[in-house]
Length: 249
Image (cartoon, rainbow, N blue to C red):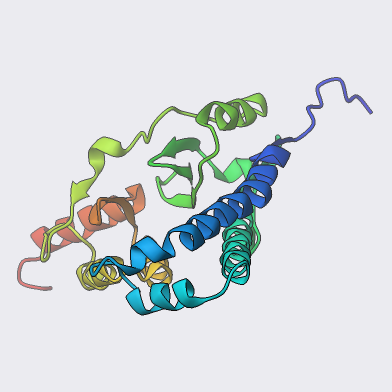
């Protein structure tokens, strides 16, 4: 078998350095904050505007060195919790000539190269679009754009430096014409979910809108939308049909 043109898959992630920073750095920062709190409780307890004043006064009454040891331990524990959350949320992207695999601790998605027309990074999200302009994947990430671009281009994927449909997005306002039926109600519900920081609800509503051919981009809690090519064509056909048969026949 000729493997002269074979290119091994490319993995893009924060690597070991990212894990060392999270699991070593966050607990150290937490320990430092805990020590600082223990060292300043006497001063903080005299300030009337300090939040959690009762807790600060309680800490100030604790004997030493137990008070300092306790606050440092709590700080380390908080740092470990943050490190665990960060590890769970880190995105690992594996690319080869056949597919791209995007993994987090709670999900593992694969997209075939044959299904993806273009790949790009926009607003700190890795996005893969199909030939219809619909989103196959939208994943938040802090991975460097240069490393992602090199990985996808190396294996023959169509990488672009920005969203090719950016100029097509329109700011959503209630009762805006041009949206498919039921999309306005879903956008209203999603606006409420965003305002209340209900991220799971917002993601689910995004998926519901995608089924209607509506693609979203968020900016400062404002929703911008565009239609996929199929949704635009469907809307045009309905409009043409209505024009040809004004009497409903």
